[in-house]
Length: 305
Image 1 (tube, rainbow, N blue to C red):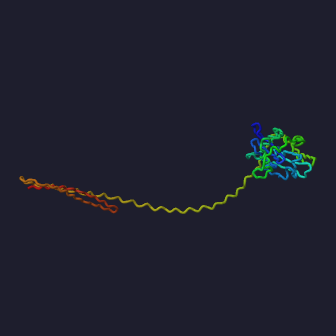
Image 2: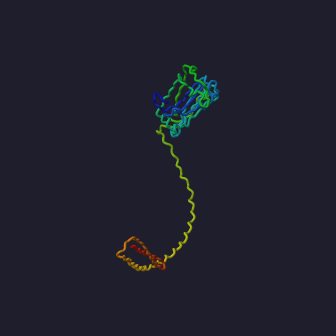
Image 3: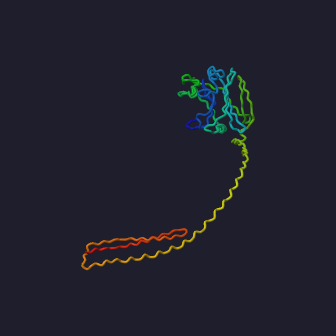
């Protein structure tokens, strides 16, 4: 669905040869698309149903292809329905493409807009110089019809005849369903005019009632707080300490004097140091105080001869 470098929406009613048949929906940016039929990776039908000497569609003989586009009451495309029939066959092959979400979007809504804006029917016969195994090959599951690509086995031309295009309903809207048996065609109309309102209104979002919440459970009562224990009375004030008595001053030691004879000769001298320590202790009912007084006495002795 990329033509001339331009991506566009595409609806493939029929991509087919004698061995495979694809119908595919493409959004503008979805090259792979979503579809059904029979061929590489697609198994809506089987090789027994469609192909040379198929029990429903024998592709050696002409067969009919019809496609209808069913719209809902909101005017949006609901499905593309494709039906294959053949004179003399007692079974038709049908498919319905009604689920398409390219990259998570609503592909049916996008194709609805493309159909209302106008799409051009195109018929082409192609494949020369190209591999067609993407359509009629074995596929990843190995269940497709063809193991090799043989372009030389293709005819130079094909014929398409008895084209017809019908409105969706008389008066411009509705749904068409065609049932074919041999050469007989029956058309059933369902009246609806999708052009009465465009673009189609958005579907009504149902009102969702909020869920009923269960009642909040009743919490048990809080236990009573224990009675406060009174604090003990403060301790009695500490008694005031009596002032300590002042120790009397130590007496000053008298200086020692050693008279020297006038004719004596000093031959030696020595100095000694005496330390005297006095300790005073004052004791009351709550405290004991101790004072220490130290007196250093120096004595020098000189010996003369």
